Amino acid sequence: MSQAAPILLTPGPLTTSDRTRQAMLRDWGSWDADFNQITARIRKEVLNIVHGTGTHECVPLQGSGTFSVEAAIGTLVPRNGHVLVPSNGAYCQRLAKICKVLGRRLTTIDYTEEKQVSPADVDRALAADPTITHVAVVHCETGAGVLNPLHEIALVVAKHGRGLIIDAMSSFGALEIDARRTPFDAVVAASGKCLEGVPGMGFVVIKRSTLEKCEGNCHSLSMDLYDQWVYMEKTTQWRFTPPTHVVAALDTAIAQYVEEGGLPARGGRYARNCKALIDGLATLGFRSFLDPAIQAPIIVTFHAPDDANYDFKTFYQEVKKRGYILYPGKLTQVETFRVGCMGHFGDAGIPGAVAAIADTLKAMGIRQVTAAEPA
Image (cartoon, rainbow, N blue to C red; front, top):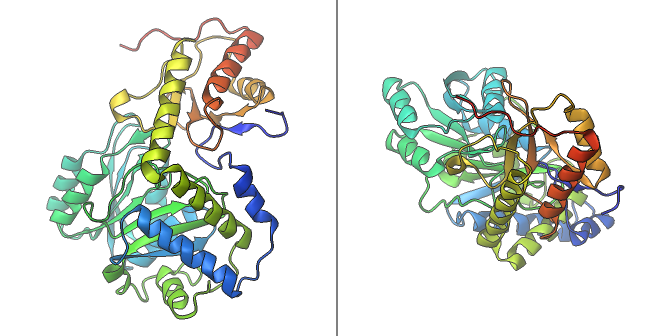
């Protein structure tokens, strides 16, 4: 791996295939029928991934994944709505911040960063407050890498007759979400994550019967998913200039996803990467932050070396010199770094990263990797 093209071991953007990058070399007219067929194909394939064909709609949107999360809350939650956000990390906190900025009433259930969201806590909160209209939950909280129990939470929310909005940014396409058995109003994801496209567009899978009632909710013209959906259904076009190269790349990435074997194959590859990563770094003395029972195979948080010679910026640059981009920790109380398990980098990627980290420890003179076990 050349220094000019390091492997990205981050939660997105990811390392993409040559075929996906090649798809961006052609220019498209945004109103052209051939381009509109690409958009239609993506919408169809995304619905297939969650088994939502016939019951749900896929509404794509320009921008990063957070744009689509904000659009989903703004479109689905009425202006007098009340959102419950169970929060166990940075991306849950972002959901809560969006609700505040949009002027939606907000209640949170707050957890520490190493804990899963508890369906029983959600159950109690909904029973105690009938004014709550929606629950917004992060499926895989990549702040620490926690996998939240989505299906169980969804059943609780459905029992109480409330709406569920799922931020599946880092899980969609690798971890199962099945609309036939897991009830939800909306699932939000993006091009540059587990589908291994490039960043620049998100999409929201919305229950059609819910979407049909969302006219006039949104605070924003450009983020109004109802308006986007109505326009696309009528014209097959995007309302405003789409990121044409990003859309074309995602179309090609989804074709490769299907060829690989879809969700079982993609999720299986990431799970193997995750195990190889944790096992490999354990041989160097690194401890992962989370209990293995709640660790998602998406990104792993590791305790930083307990050595005076350790400095993340230097550590990052030294690993980068050896061909890999890591990610800083997102935790507030503990010094950590994160390593992603997603992306198109083949079976050699994770062992290569472990070797690069081993070389970096030597170069930095780091001898004490593992701190004493916490009490």
